[in-house]
Image 1 (cartoon, helix red, strand yellow):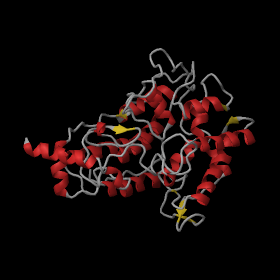
Image 2: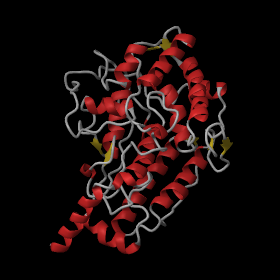
Image 3: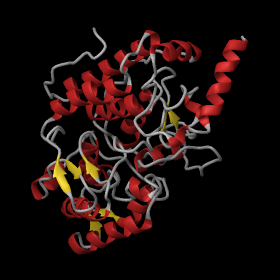
Image 4: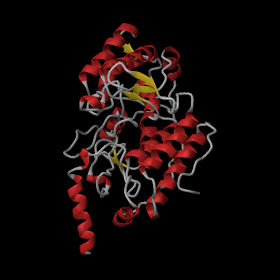
Length: 375
């Protein structure tokens, strides 16, 4: 008993220092002895399988009496994703922002009608980097003890605020991490969205605006962010982010493809469905992304030596290489985070990696499965 109390005392001390360590750390970088001493103290929750598609994906009222908006309470987590913030504010996700992968898949389908394989890949790729595989919990915002005891430094379960996976440079309404706050609504960024909507969309945000704005945001970060990077996996979420508001923030009864800017602010800043909001009619993924990429054919890369020193990264998957994205993500990023997992940690990782691969199969990508920790 005293030994276990000592472990949790150490964990409590480390919780005060996690912000000093780099992103992309979960139970990573620990020796076999450290893992063997820490993992048994965590309550293992075997990850259940993800839900399938909705039985009925027609448009329906989602800002209903069963899902009223409630303001945040102290300790509630919100982060860089306006869709998840909104779902938590309306109770489609736990209102404290501490979620499981199954809850996430259910919520994005029920609240917005994300296509099932698209939802599963987004959720499990994000969870594997930012969540706690032992407790099966993740924060949609910052690191928090509510996801379970963290391992000793430098490891941390960092939540969606972790830079360069789901969140990353060139966000539409959040600043680049280099400038200090990568997760809070940024009015200056939003006013850029407004400006481009007025210039190219007659005051509405649409696919044409999305393409012009995406090009500007990338060029702006190259010119002003000395640490700019836009490579896989963030590359894929950045371009999907451009069309997401058109596909999912327009009321399902409205077939115009034109997002009202007051409605956009409701999601991006206020984290709430507009009154009487209906989800889109029919499940989709990233419809319209081809409009953006046809206009702005970006090659992944980064600023190598300060601003305006952009170089191509030949190791990154491009937008038309989903299987390279999958293989590099598993064999590169996940393997680097968890080089030698054992016991329930290895079991949890393998289960979640299986769910991730099954999402690529459902999407029709035809990728060859990889097994970083054996079959």
